Length: 283
Image (cartoon, rainbow, N blue to C red; front, side, top):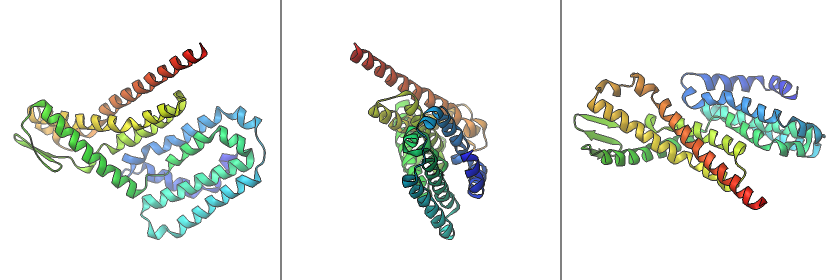
């Protein structure tokens, strides 16, 4: 009931977020947003017994958090003309999440809040990644994918010359553009790794290892995709390198599934080690 009333009160920014996330020009990096409230909602729902048992009004903590969210919302509104659409929606979304958290603390208390801290913090992924951070991340992934791809090309024995992010092969030259950085896969796998760590692991360092592993997984996976497509274009079908070719446009999902399997194996291995540690301690 609280969430339904809250959504009515903040109807405008939430609809604006949804339209932005699903717009064809943005959905490449924002389509996951529609699943965030579903995941958080479920994680909060399964904790409903603890919430009800510890439920009590907390004016002292709830109101300041809610007011902070309102202030952030007003600041975002006032700064609308100074920000691009992504950053404007990101700031407004964060303010809405803070307001919702403040209202939750006010109605259910700090103990209930602590029991659902993760799903509430997980709601921050509703906010699109700020432009500056996105640009820096893309440049880093582009550079990393270029370096790893070059190493893999050398391992294959294919004659290759490199000029920055451009590779020259016999009869073919390719550019590792920002669009080839693998940012979409990295962002999605990063969010999944955080969720998987929370659900399946207990140790803080194992959770950290899982989340940090997304970076090498996606960089290597993206580099293998670049090399694989290039070799297919070089030796089998030159048309595969065109942007409108099915494998070039949609093939990233195949490699993402491989990335997902690798991440799953890492989580399973770390969870198994945790079980062994528990057995040794209990023994």
